[in-house]
Image (cartoon, rainbow, N blue to C red; front, side):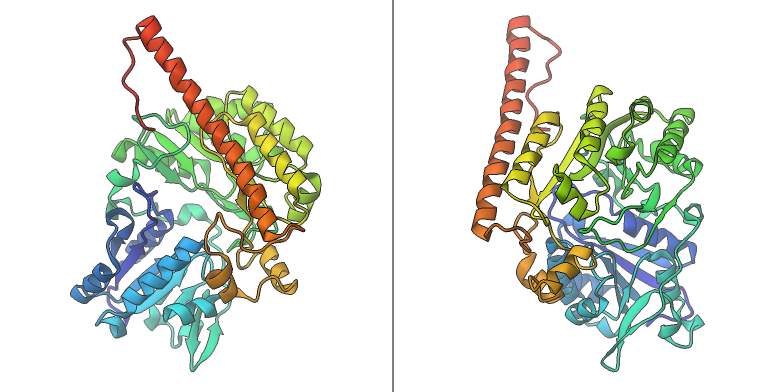
Length: 469
């Protein structure tokens, strides 16, 4: 187990089934915090090499670690991977010699359940950078219960310590430990409106969100910002070391206010970084002058969490949006030549065939076809208001029912909050996505026809061949 000496930590990047994975930014921050504290860190890149479950057990058998860490969000795929990885970890002959630690949005709201299904020793609840270092320095505490922000089982009972104080100064965190990861794999991650020659990478400029949507669970309340100067320093290093040309801001809400968005854009312009970038935005802050500045700073894509195009459903969600704000924001986004990500979900309280049709029409009106857009059912993730409503209304028995029986796929219905039968629900969603996919494919087809006319009619010698993007 961990002690006073330098601790050897293995952080697992789970396989998400993608041909090219996005950089696991959370692990990057945990690794840098551990290194700064003097500990040794290894990354197990199942996400890149698609190792089998047996490979992880053999790796743990053949190497010595004091701690093994795994973080997951609340998705159905992540839940399955957590159970699979936990079995591999627990099958290691060295299992009794290392601390098995879980963290992330998945385990944080219901740590006892995750401790029981995984047989992990500890769940880190909320932000992990300070907590994981404290777990490595366990000798400083007479009892594990003195470490803030964790949960564990002791004598058959759940022990939850007091919440960890949030990291107020995000600039105080070390930049992610990029050197531990196969960066040349991650820079190939596809992001909207990237060029074939772009090398892409994620950056986190803030943590948290000021809104409280009913379907969303957030580990930490409120929002905290890194200074623009600190973010520019990180992007410059990414350009210098890895020739990154496209950044996607992983903030839960990059456009947290007009003031913040303006500060970040001005910083990018003044730093002369010459990058292209995308982010998650908010339509009530999508003002023409702000969007114009974003485009000048290199923005090419804004992902909007619209979720519904019906005022009653938006109110039920606590979205703090109206259809009028949505129209004005999307009109302004398209007028500035920026590409909007149009996210609609179906199945919230108040949803019906009519509200679904409104969502389809919204996507059709504003779609620039930079992505294929489909509509998914809403999922009441544990920790969200909608999750507890589902339990209260008898639609969900609890967390085991959610993960084992209800949330088996993000495109399948977990809990039906509408007046439709499940069969009617699926029939409506099939029709909606059939329409959206056909629109997308028709647009792609017409694009190829236009290209062929230019090649064969105009003898365009600049053509580089039909390529899959």
